Image (tube, rainbow, N blue to C red):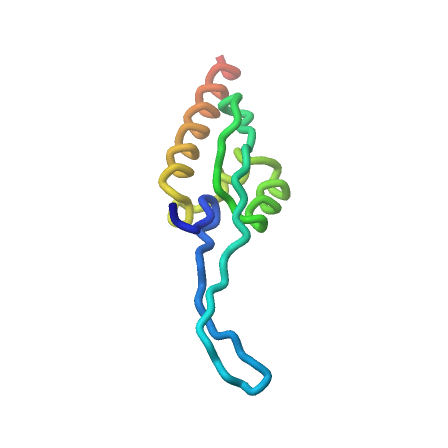
Length: 101
């Protein structure tokens, strides 16, 4: 499994570790990934995703998983998150239709 956030697309970066004598050696900068269960109100169930700590803060700030996915672009989402976004949009559209009639 790749070291990539499913919601923001953050991945491993490479760079140099620089010593006091300015000697440069290769190193990797890994994202702080967490395996979390987020609750989707539209679907009425929890969903397990591999997200960065930064993305988790963004989800809370935007008001939950459903609101985050509604605003997120499809390009940075993983395949699993894209399918989830479509299911949530479909459930929300069906819910709005039920309220209207």
